[in-house]
Image (tube, rainbow, N blue to C red; front, side, top):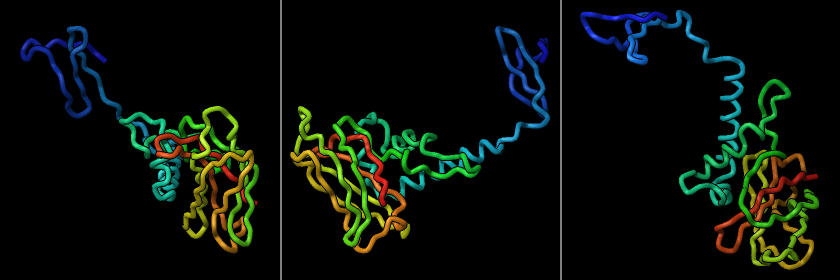
Length: 209
């Protein structure tokens, strides 16, 4: 990098071939450009792009459910951006060399409502049965809150069930899918919405056995 003065043209700025010029602290600076630009396709960058595509594909696979479940985002932020920010890179497992989604770490809902705690998920003849603690005895928790459970199947199907939180200490919600077995299920989640849908809880992953 060198300082230059041009008595004919005043200060210099711009670029030509391998040379770039600019003004800095009142002086004209000239420098050469990199002869071999840095490779923008490193292994790390490839993995980052692959991770981004995986999370974006997961968002699309949930069929709009997450559009109403990220209620704590700023008004200027879309549900898509909130979903991406919540799950990159924490829900990506790179331990095998090729990035894959760790569904147990994926967040599909986030808000300030008191959540429910999953006690178990079982695949059976009628569908996926998910047991949970309602926490209905906590002050200001409404029995009218809506519990939402959904599962994504290997076929690409998305099955959803909804019911009120209720006032019992323990409850069960059934995601109807006759004849389902655990190996059919890609992922399953549970979260809570309030009655008017303006607030949500943090989602819970359901391990289906």
